[in-house]
Length: 396
Image 1 (cartoon, rainbow, N blue to C red):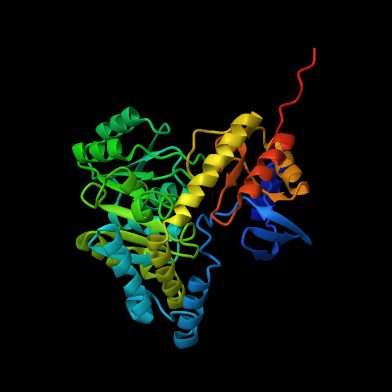
Image 2 (cartoon, rainbow, N blue to C red):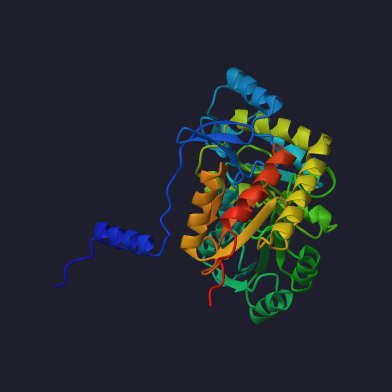
């Protein structure tokens, strides 16, 4: 009888393979941070790889709301939401987000990943189909896999391919799911066309607006607001709170019927401790700020435009993105890693993104811009990128 494979041998072989392909990942310890300045290995760097788009993670109102709530209510919620973990701050955040976005009801999760797993596990089953953009975030893909439905993926932004995939499966229920803003390319999904397609094919349309909410649209109501869509066209919408909100968790919005069903049946919601009430209080403070302080979005848009103008003048390989996500696709894994190291040597923290986060051959620097950056920060970044990412000279 052949010996059983050993898991440790498999782990070691897989790590060696990742090392050979330039795909090892390591955590970097941030020793301190103030605004967009971070201390790493004893050096101060300007951080251009944070998703804190509006600079709210360190805002005094947000920090004070968290501290005050924790002082009165403690840190943890103590139980799952359906036992005794659902508290005043949770309910208030759900109500305020639903009112802001024009939905009947909200449901607060500990993360966007959990929310996407919960939605699909609760609503879909074997025999159903979930049609998704190939560049959707991993948690949308994993949610469909958890539901054991058929997952069909269409080429990025290809409406006709999405229609063909919906038409190919007519036996079970259908969901059409997409990011609002794609996390690695920074471009927007064609939400109006997708909403029409979903309606014509009796598919539930579901949007994850992690990188659009707070940043785009009137009052920061995100990519669906930019597209002019309401709860009628987008029956389920998830708003992760770890980006522009500057905190943690995710708000799922929908009708009473849909949210009620998910709250009662979704395993990632039922069998986990409810988020800290203090974090919900902090996210209420963030919501107030991003609704009322439109100057943050105006400044952010101005910095993005300034970066793009400078990058074009410098001949940098930027993509068609007008959001705070500005990718520079370099192709080769080692080139992206070398560019990231070069930027660090010049005083900038910029992450190298490699497969499987992006497709093979599309390794890149993923630059993210925040309201906390200055015009001087952006100009210095462009100058450094021009030095580090300049194309190699052509030799005869």
